[in-house]
Length: 149
Image (tube, rainbow, N blue to C red):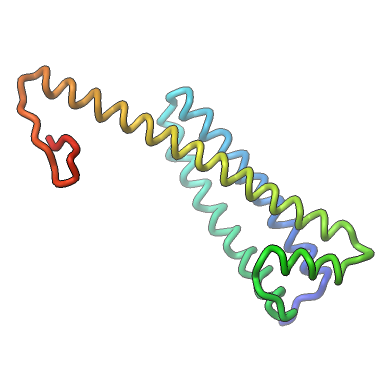
């Protein structure tokens, strides 16, 4: 069943709303990581997985509509097409711009969270190695040059 321009607008709104919820979870995850409240991370991961699945479904519907319009799925092509097709509907263009901005925000927070996790992991590995050495155990090195216990 072909989507109408009104359906396309609804898809963009749904994607924007879902992405905003996703960003809120990323922010809560970031706070939990900074505060060391690791027990909260599992629920955030579960919620993120659910929202990612929903975003993929929405994204697939949006891309299907755009491909049916003869577009390549590229930001510049979509932006130009929106300006041509929705000249009297700045709401659609604004939704698209918001989606792009929100995607960048989500990407930055996710990268920050990954860096926090990596930093904590490195700290824990050093602490474990120190404890291991203090206990008189011999450390060996694995094939990648890191301590292998």
